[in-house]
Image (tube, rainbow, N blue to C red; front, top):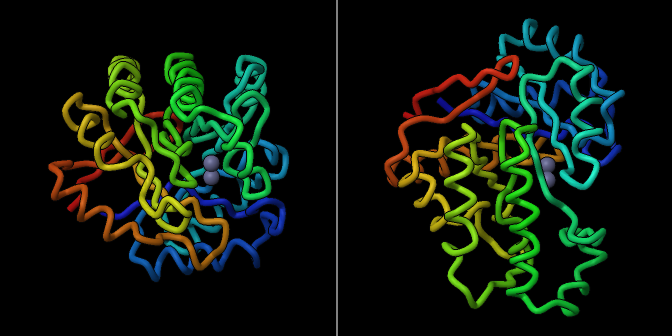
Length: 252
Ligand SMILES: [Zn+2]
Ligand SMILES: [Zn+2]
């Protein structure tokens, strides 16, 4: 079964949750053979997420539509968690898009990498990630190695950064997202990379899948191909969430 749990129907505010703007996302998902989709808007748009419309569109289009949210994990996580609890989400994706207030994945701020020793940057990024995984707020770890977006790699082995975190993820029943959007970024590969996925496999950390589509045409992008790769790696299942409870689906 193919799933895509990371879709931004509002992109960065270019679209809204209206029937006419959401329908193309759903039609594209159908066209790509996706059985379950999940909208995971950025948490900046919490009040604009139209839960009732998404549910209706699911029924009308015979598509399993989930409503999640992608949360910027930061210093105010507990306050955010309190606010999120007012809404009825199927799942919460925790993501890190900033280090010390620097939006490192934003193309306009790319030159910020030159100010860092890359090993120090990786340490800082993964210590934030450790906090995200251990805080108990989220269901899914979003694009776990996003810090590689422009191709900067540490001298240290990636295992040293991620293995302890993935052990915690296994203990906390966290699910790691396989996000296909990295293929279309300068780094040119999925998040997280193959080595991290191998460690997930070894430690029994479950995975889910998302395209991080910000346009209808990007829904389901590379999901079928990536699912096949995961099967070849030995993964058997992917996880979706319904009302914050995990459901396991056969990858084949
Ligand atoms: Zn993100
Ligand atoms: Zn996203």
